[in-house]
Length: 539
Image (cartoon, rainbow, N blue to C red):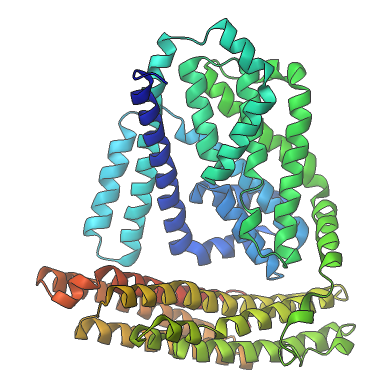
């Protein structure tokens, strides 16, 4: 590497890092703020295969990430709320939505990045509501993505003046499989097929890559994208893993077929500019994925799921014997009785989650890490109970032929999954903040601690109301629960406003614990929004 190459490589690396960071900011913000609505959208979209594909595409465009959408679908499917065909259809649609987002982001609008960044900063700085600031953060993420694409184009512009020589083209064409593998690895390591394909398009535009080489890179990026979600789903959850593995197998099979036949179809790819042709190949790949696999999505995803379930047929053997003891296997052939039995076990799960949350605030008074670790041990019990319910109702579903019984089963699974998500939020998010406070020896101001305590108490009352509503099957409680959630949102917004005033007044404790205070409010609000989803499907 010569000194003349160093600025180019540094600029490319900086642009790619900015692209990845912008994608992370946008994805995490949308997922955190709108996760309940997105899950509800995916559930409604599962009515038919076209709606499932369209729903998956819509959510992927909103989140700028097929992987995040796939994980949402896998989570909803893992909770038993989606059949394998619908979950796989959503995943196929997510791939299409992500491809379309790539085309949107590649539009050359020089004034758009600064405009989006200015708007995002304005929302984030001056919005009075928590959601308004979240919108600002999402716009900042989108602005960073657009700015990174412009920087990529500028960094690669010198390559247009020094086109690749015939000798180098010959070398690259002789190792197209290696180029495909390199971009498969890039898509996986970046956790973003959008970022990988945008980089390919920028390279094709700036360095005038030949179409066959760009096609190999695009196919590699699409195959690599199938691996991203695999390590992110539970190892022993066949329902969640089946859609991810089915998607991976479908992408690898289609990429291999198209790679072998590139000489036949390459001339039909539209697009005048090399960069646009690369984007068009990416979109065509994902549309073809839908056309080929959607017609038999149920059989394909179902076969993968049955294979995983056969390997995992002793799923509950490692659980505490007392967990799931009330799930009577003799009732499985009677769906209504089995659902009632699972409902009782789900009520126990709700009680466990309630106790866990009630003591979660004590973590912020811990004197050492072992106290925090001891307090979050209950999450293992919650996960085990949810797993037992999921396994039991998965077997019970095979005997259901009445839509009313299936809806009742889905409600139990929705509630059970929500309780597990609440436990995860405590053990992963709140405990992390408590550990951070301990490491920094930080303390909340008296006013700040009082606000957090009152909001925690309000969320605890909400959790009790959700548990009571589920136990009594009281449909009328849904309106009251949603009202409680709105009140908690207002309390969090007011607390943030008062916290900022304390920062302006140079309150020492507020300055020392500012990020922990704000993140704690965010996580408490996130738990409240999760609890709201438990009522979305009714009781």
